[in-house]
Length: 221
Ligand code: SF4
Image (cartoon, rainbow, N blue to C red; front, side, top):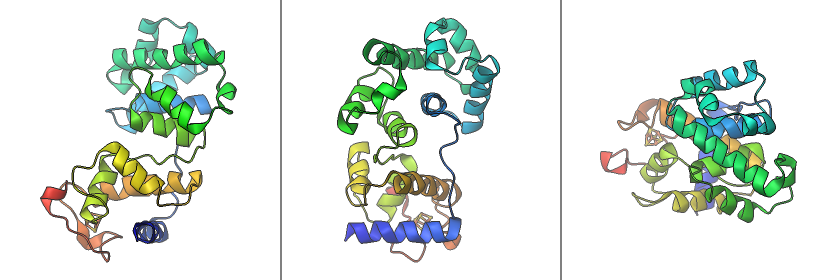
């Protein structure tokens, strides 16, 4: 049963690695901003961009909505692709102000399916970003997947190689109890495994999952 395999993976990872304390961010809007800025860059660069916004006392929807896009791009320069990311942040803010009076609290009563669809319709917000916002900022039971998830899941025979984002999300989301805290921790643990052990060239010898059936064959990248 897939659900039992997923539960066993979680148990092995949590027992060995403990809680990962995701997602860093002191407010809902900081988490959203981080989720948009982290595309194609490392987290320390995102932190520098967020520090710039905080230092200028700009990290609120209202203030960033009113800020010129070019000025916003300068503040977030450390995150890389800063012109594109400034536009993406603005796209999110325009949607928030056009539809929800600029208030994140007005999203609390929107159903998860509808909110996900609306986020995905914003230019520059892809599935991983939308799901990170839903899970980490709004505590919705949506599983976030990424390249690490794909690699580990295929190498452990949970899904066929080449599965797309939606197939991976459904694999985890529909075979685990719908608990945001579980999804939060599970994703963070998989990222840790992907970074430390399940690299393109797998380091199975010391991996917490090496007692489970797996195939680190390069075809399962
Ligand atoms: S490194 Fe090996 S044991 Fe660890 S998750 Fe990858 S395939 Fe599995």
